[in-house]
Length: 140
View 1 (cartoon, one colour):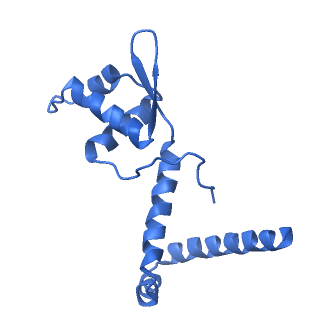
View 2 (cartoon, one colour):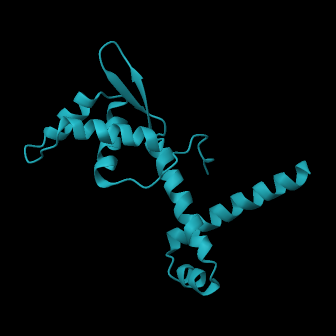
View 3 (cartoon, one colour):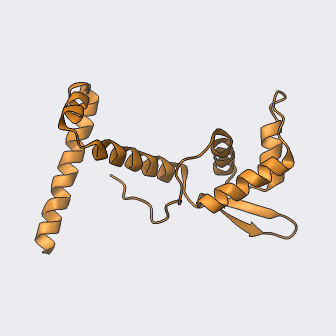
């Protein structure tokens, strides 16, 4: 089980265009506005203004998903969170929302609907939690 990443974006929720642009930056590793714009326009059925891409990249930077550095002639964006870290952060947020319901009947209904593979995963998580609990008790 991977620990939560040290950097967490201020806002996890992203719109469809923000998500698309973030995926492009992940694929490229780092990207300029031109790189992202060209990638989006490679689909002949798409239209998107260059300035819209700039706005989205700035918004992702403000939300804490990307960082921006000025290179010789252009600004270049890099991800602050990997794709895998983003999945982990989103799963963590969803789990916290689920647990916030704190209604035993809802949790029980969820548990009743699990398939065998899910039960195995939950058992592995439970074993990991027990090991963490034992380690914490030993350190005390």
